[in-house]
Length: 114
Image (cartoon, rainbow, N blue to C red; front, side):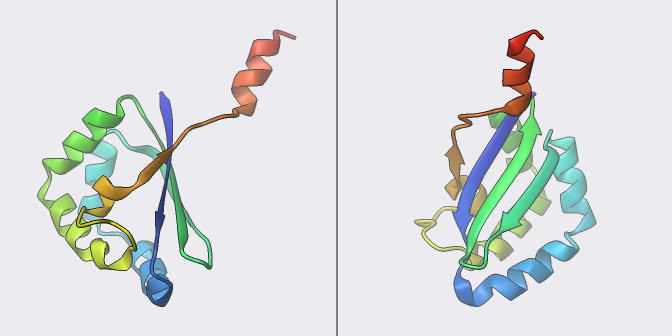
């Protein structure tokens, strides 16, 4: 299972509404994410607008493609796009910056073979 971490930036004047929208995500969006292979998905939001997302997936490209095929994702992305800075005309699910994992405690502990 691959661990994916990404960042986006929420506009400062939209932070409160962004938080509200994620307090109760549409049930069909939740099911679509699960069915597309997004596991243990979390979002973290800093007061300056930095949004960090983290999830596990077997195949990132396949998970993104599966979401692309759903009508609920198109609706959700259209509603969420105005909340973000610097998307360059892309949807949020196309405009995030993926981060490289440089440390994993579990993996390093397992490598010790105590």
